[in-house]
Length: 283
Image (cartoon, rainbow, N blue to C red; front, side, top):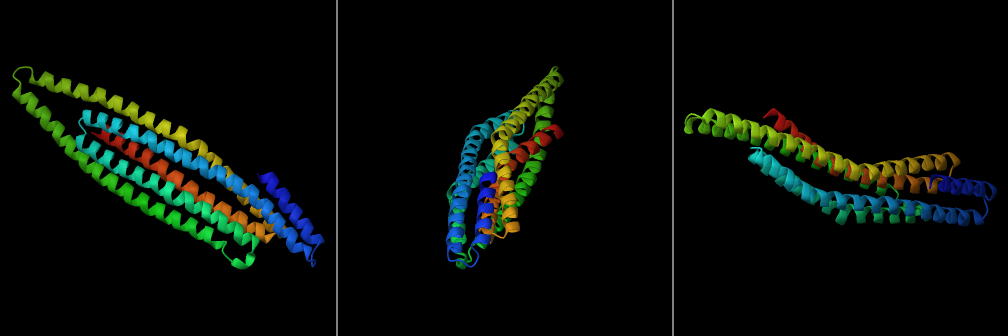
């Protein structure tokens, strides 16, 4: 894509230099914009569709993984923490999944169409819409991540304290209520809890690894496309094909917004699971 786009940019720059002042110059520039738009929109469609597929697949995996992990946490004596984890993560995943599928994915496609129209007719002055959308998405994701992380951290640590008190109360009750072997039963309870904790750690590590396998390939692809758009925009700016430069910068901004959503969606699962593992080690 980068090589093809650079070739179109160089051709447009050569034609503009040869035909400067001619009526055909504007026509050739428009043809160049249309050719470049085809390359850019095809690449963007590939990135956007892959991102949507990854988000849907990741949401489907979390729909199965979250109840299983929460169940293991509850069996490990972390009943309150498991309830908080399951509720908060499920809501966050559903909200972000629907936000991407119903708003961000269609919005980015519309922005690319508007950017193409602005490149074809520079008098429209609408290329800044993509940059505005990128900033709005970034600020929205920062707000969501801040609220999510704060809420999960506070409620999880409060729940962990409650679970610790409950476990100590159970051990004390068993030790005092069961004659003679009460201490042994209490120690056996601790051993069982430690064994389930190992299962929880293995399950949490599995979830983090699977999430990386699902999300990292599309993230690498999106980052490379963003780099390609940025490099092509630099070439276009250096050669003076400003209409193509605006279009490429819009494409870069839209892909950057998609990357931000993917990273946010991925970090929600990774950070929450890591917090649960740390809490489990601490208790």
